[in-house]
Image 1 (cartoon, rainbow, N blue to C red):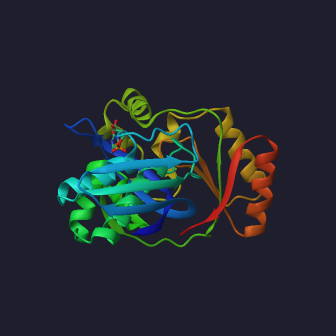
Image 2 (cartoon, rainbow, N blue to C red; image 1 turned 90 degrees about the vertical axis):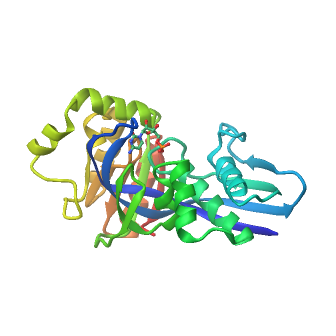
Length: 277
Ligand code: C5P
């Protein structure tokens, strides 16, 4: 059986940390939204005596072994439901890697959706729990749309927001890994309870949009330059997504968004125009 799935990127329109957990993760509250920027995976699956997973991708910097989140998703699904199958995956990678856009998480979620379309063994709760084992953002990516997420990020409550859907997402060269970004927060805030009491609002469904705690530790000239170009081009708002470094600009029209995307590209930034999904 051959099928394809799209893996949509996510952006965070609000992201705050409320504490450190015993398991080393952080308690977060975040408003996530899917966007139309997406990867595509094509899966060819057939039953077989031996389990095998082969991944090919257009992005040579991505490992195609057991460390790949797509591989992990396919394997976890087969192990959980005792399935032996030969799975071949073609990944067309468009979402920049390690940019705070949930590309890897979304590929994993798309793989889980594909496995379940093929083998039909998991109910929604089971699929969400496999997703949470793979990564904190994978459950959201499985469901998509707009949601207020808490816990490690894996507890999802559907939400609604009313903002313009026209976006530009731009990225510079610098990269800080997610664990490193969290370590920078730990160093800066030490006590998240105190920080939360002092800042004047609490992470909740009523919290203001366009706040990202990571902006206070991940900031550099490229991010500033991207935001400045977006504001010059009429952005209604700009915000770093996830632990960065991608920056999202919200525009009142597709035309403005197009002009800003072009301006960013002229300055050498990777830039995409997309819409809320
Ligand atoms: O869950 P995921 O694999 O995406 O997380 C990557 C890393 O980010 C974790 O190993 C952890 O260091 C950090 N993290 C965290 N708190 C979260 C989510 C991620 O500390 N809520």
